[in-house]
Image 1 (cartoon, rainbow, N blue to C red):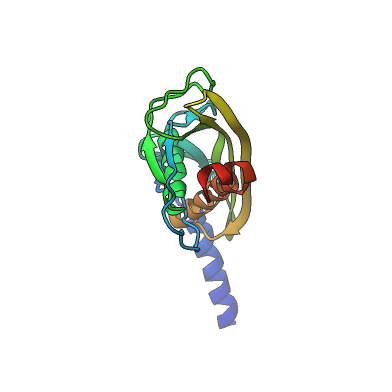
Image 2 (cartoon, rainbow, N blue to C red):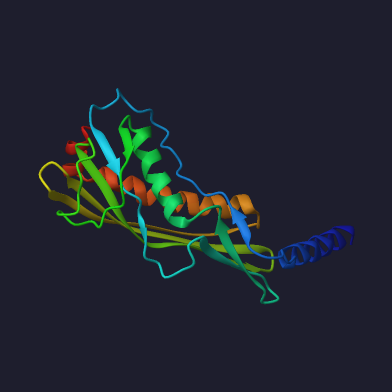
Length: 209
């Protein structure tokens, strides 16, 4: 009987916990997760990174929604903007691979719009999706993270588009709710999408990886 009472108490505790209402937006710390393998010698390539454009049709700082059993919804937000977050992730991915990174002016992703800015390659692109759905049900929280990026690489000296890549990642999992679990899920999805950029053989050659 004691075991039954303990299980019932645990069940009620989880129900209450999953239904606890946080007030207002929930701030998350999302970032690129560096690969475990260490970068080799630094590459001579200097890569210019233009701010990624947010075309999601969402508020600039909102990257998800949390829904609890009573129907209450809270925005999941990031400090700054989602565009800044994704751009910082791309730059961190390049640096972790031994590349020199330089911030360049906003680019319209056209061949004509490129400026040399002292770099051999320029990367820019669009954020089509960067979103996390957190749905609480009894005993668990279901997370759905989705990231889709369009990355454009250009040679500014030749005014030529080298590569246009569509990269994406999705993650579905059931967890016990915590902000850390939300942060890890979306960070993992973002990192997985960005890492796909470096699997392109033509781009790897240009980056001297």
